[in-house]
Length: 170
Image 1: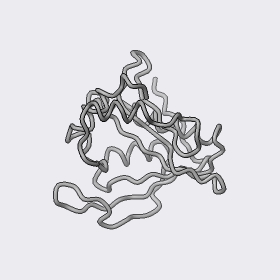
Image 2: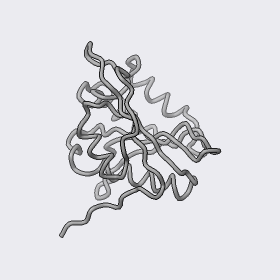
Image 3: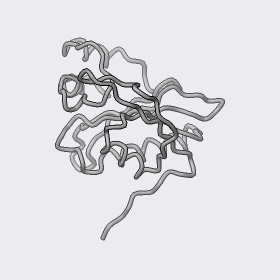
Image 4: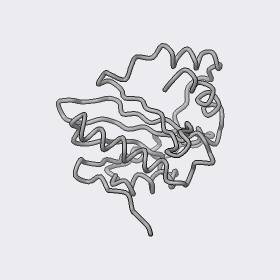
């Protein structure tokens, strides 16, 4: 992520549709968002690997993904992703970004498993994760509150030998 990405990040973080199934914090101004990006630590630590999701053809920023909470002893990390550009939804970008980050985590960071939490009602995300090879491991009842309602969270995991390659058509 670069300081020039702050405006897109700020716009996404203030879009209720984009943030529908994501944990949110207090609203930030564009200046605060820009400062947060400028002051963040470089990606060279094992604490968190934050990467932009871009379209291959145009190099257009469409989202953010990261690996965090590394446990080197156990070869584990947690994955987060969201696509902020709504015209990119349903196009396979999220699944591709998940596969790419997982391949990197398994090959370069020597991870054995990558987990994530997803709202049970977020069917599109659950399908995308399953396409990449994630399986459901458990459920946290009423683990997420949105719009005055509690929603269950699903724990999903992929092991290094379970990551699925892209499906090729044609």
